[in-house]
Length: 488
Image (cartoon, rainbow, N blue to C red; front, side, top):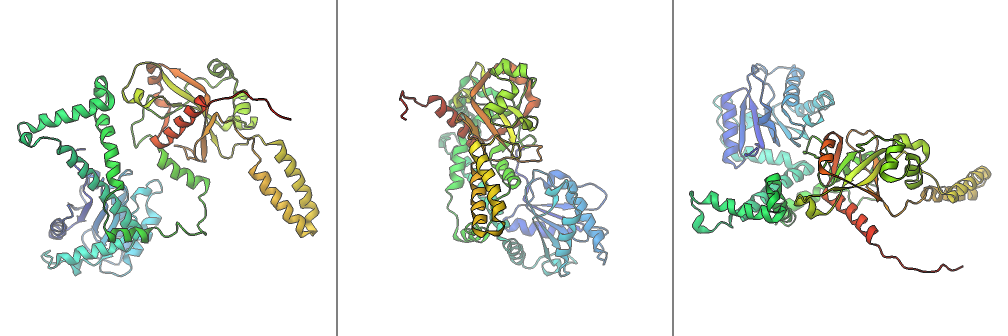
């Protein structure tokens, strides 16, 4: 998509109202798309794919105001379900209505009636503005456009969390624009004419791509090559922008609980969802290939003793119970995986040769682990103390302390050769889990073999988590050892 999606969209059934609002926002520096609604043609989802501020007339059906508000609410809900993209991001709904509290009624209606499988169609906030305060309803003229701008801005800033996120997105767009401008500055002034500009840009882009991924590999994905070169610059600009004081204040108002000692820790499911956003690229939002650096592949071979022994020298029970310290009843709920690793330069330059994978297991948090015998003994003592302490407060307290000790030290410690991910809610999963990767069981497979695994790609580790895994693997493989005698 060459052009950016509009951030401001206005939907109205009256042409002169639509033009008035649209032109006013344009003059105020907010590029806006006006969409006429007549009820006979479906609205195009492409018009709404990037909307952040959506203006809608409350009475789109027949243009008639009535006390039957639910009828109009249902019409708005249907439009949102049909047009808002699942990948479009958050948006605010501003409804033109002079009736007090109607925006609250509409918000409650949308929360309750938008289809459960379309949560993205629910607005972050529903704000009501009386249209006749800004527009001459007869001819559509706007006497004081600044008042409309201030009313919209004030309505958005009322919710500092929303204002902060929308401001952050605008800052990212600014940083991208600045990065592009820096790239264009590399074109010599003498070549900034229509005849030579394209060729000069081609030269700069070709050099960047060639040095990023290697001369013979640019054709594989030219866009990715340029993105790899420019991404660090873009990231640095986002992090180090000169943010106005007013925007800093919005952020301070938006984040208020970070120092609250009463703020409870996230549940495994909540943490799993956040960590998935931070560390996993999932199917649907990004193109994933089995040869991608960090690709997480569902075990592409028969999950049998014979096949696992052929590849690792261990049976299922030996691997999962003796290496990963699971109880045998947990074997059925664990999912074997391969993770594509290897040198960054080999991946970036698409160098020839077998591809390196590490063997791992996706283990649910609820899977039963083997327990340390000492912890089991502590638990037995705790149970006896609890019985004796029914009438003795001191013994009850001691039993409680032992329970904490047994809980914290109950699982047998895994070998340092096993790397554990943060808790994750994997794509399609209903329970939080962690990826456990065994560094001592690498595998290599030819690219043509891996290409047949495209349906086995579950997700891809983003670079931060992938580098954490690769660093752990490198440190384990390169760790020094010494000869020493034990002492009695």
